[in-house]
Image 1 (cartoon, rainbow, N blue to C red):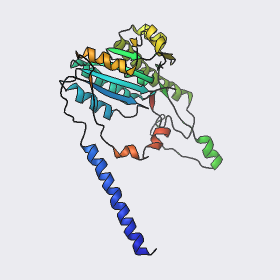
Image 2: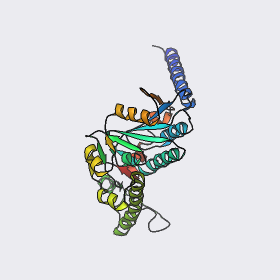
Image 3: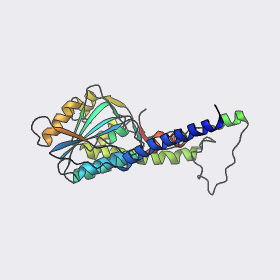
Image 4: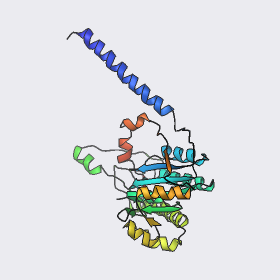
Length: 284
């Protein structure tokens, strides 16, 4: 095969690649606008790790301004994730409720830690008896690679403006003073979690604190403790949301299209996901 033919094949392959990228970007740019006719239940699904709230927040805002969507059904099947996006979703759900929307949460196999956090403001939380939920707590994972670097004969010099500027560095263990500082941050965010659950579930904060030691519960246990309102399947949650919306018969369920983001298909943030210390509402 001569050189010119390889060049032609390369050009064609690049053109095909750019064509499909253009289609995907066009889908993404279309956004989440949709024309909703007739009273409907707005379904939002949160599945997997919570690392970015933007798509979920966009869907909540869209449903919040839709007069034909009186009830939002949030399906949660997540072990939780990063603190800030979990809090953003929680806050946006609260704003939707303030605009008069009802909120029903249907818990899937797992709705723990941040997955429970975003469920807390619901008017009704429905879980299966075997759902794993709870895990009310906060953690921060700080990887250390100093031992590996020593074996490789590599050292890292750090020039810093003040004592704690490189706190949490992967190149050395933390000092006791640094550990205490980070524990203070974690306890403050933990208090925010407990407060959110107490307010959302309308429970005394002291009662939540007794359950907020990181342990998980089955759906049935959570119901007995007041963390879950009722037990049932996803389809039963749809029926309940329809009743709350005043819909007779089988309710119409509406999903919004999720914008495509090219970032979702590349691995540019692997290092930050696994090496950067971040506060997490996550289980385990």
